[in-house]
Amino acid sequence: MKHYSQDTVSKIGNAIVYFSDRIPDLSKTKLLKLLYLLEECSAIKNNTPFFGLNFEVWQAGPVVKDVYIDLSNDQPYLLKDYVATHSDGNNTYISAKVSFNDDEFSDIDLELMDYVVSKYGNKTAKQLVRHTHNKNSAWYKAASENGLLDLFDSGKTNHSNIEIDLAHYLSGCDAALYAENREVMDAFNMLKK
Image (cartoon, rainbow, N blue to C red; front, side, top):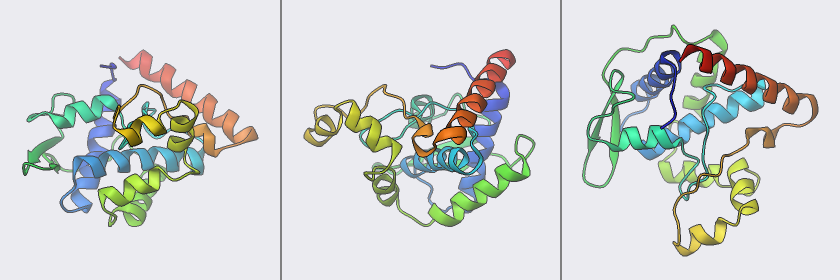
């Protein structure tokens, strides 16, 4: 498990609270896609990471492994102060344990979260998986370049540790700025641990 600063955990936890307050019956799969789309939108619109999380290429991915594992437990550990999980036997659903706290978010962050909710909040988990897997996506590029598409399709594997590069959506100065902002965020988070 990656070690996250308390500020990062708080930002992830409160973003999940934000989504669960606005999206009824929020499943784990749908939430994981929304977190990715939030990170993707931040890269594209602002050339900066939202959380600075590493999303991996999974069959139903993109997925942050640590968040997936945490939300797969009966009682989350990493996010225990923010959310609870409930299973109906087929799916795991996420609900807030606390009120949303915007201390970790800028006005631009809040606008991005509103955008993600308005654009993707009414989509099903399956629709979001299809969206994140389209042939122009960073997920598809990474899966294709690493020989994962056939493995996923044949059922020989359902996950990998290949990371998705969101700079895929950027070019020139934008890509360089995103890489620089990601590096600064990573360094800042290392110092806060």
